[in-house]
Length: 384
Image 1 (tube, rainbow, N blue to C red):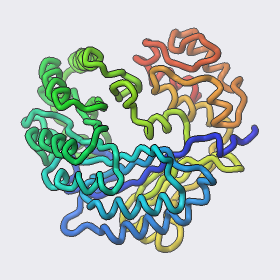
Image 2 (cartoon, rainbow, N blue to C red):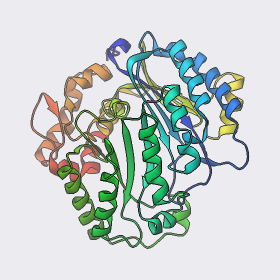
Image 3 (spheres, rainbow, N blue to C red):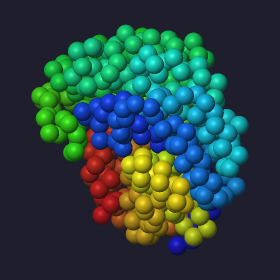
Image 4 (cartoon, rainbow, N blue to C red):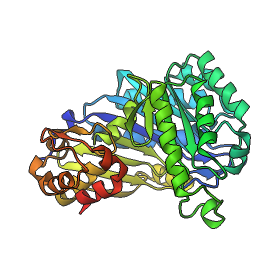
């Protein structure tokens, strides 16, 4: 195994902001409902401390993307993001055309901050609309209304954002395929550049797992997904990844970097990181609780886990990411990003091709339509 050259691997930066006004009943993300004042200054200082410690691992690369995820990052003010972006520029460096995304809730208080976010340097918003049906929003435990979502998109445009993602959930309690398509039609009327389409699933350790709602039958959900994807295609959106659709040239560059097995510096509570160093690939995971994270950052290192994947694990890790892309990736990306020869993929690849899950093109690694339908089975061949 020859370690890949760090300079050859693109770099992104992920910053986790874990605070929420309210934990949604379906959410299994590292998010924490917080009453009263948010610890904005203390959290910023913890991020600064972690960044100064971790930045040397990025080497001489400038980041091509930054993504502020949560939680609800839009609960913090524009000054917080101006400050952390200044630090990222100082200690890592940001590409001139860096894509900088912030996840936002469409509540009125967050929308009032959109102009400040744009002034701070954020140039892409990802707004968690989820539905434009007020009854569905109530069932999902969301704290905004459909009208607030529409007004949030208008506020984002007024603030100067020309790159918007809107999240839409389907398979909701009581939802028919026709109702879901009507929901999507409302979203398309807002003219976003990107739409992330997610099926509502019941995850362990959530409110819905303890008190599950009555969801549509599997066949109904499958019909709904087909109808939604067909409508998106008609509207000019390209289905480029399992859950993501974009107008031409508007795919999320930060997330594409994950799926293409690029590097990312993970900062903040619960953040994961992947960095290529002279010794190989280093994965990190931070303390998940915000208080534990801030204490650990002050003490010197908020990472609760650091490890280098074994060579035997890398084909599975690579496939787990790249096969989510409908067009796949060039086969040469595997040795470039892992340091292993491409023949490490030969056995699972041959079986996947035999089963009709993978295109039989030796220069490219891409799922067939059947492979996209049975993606977990396809990825499982490489994980074995």
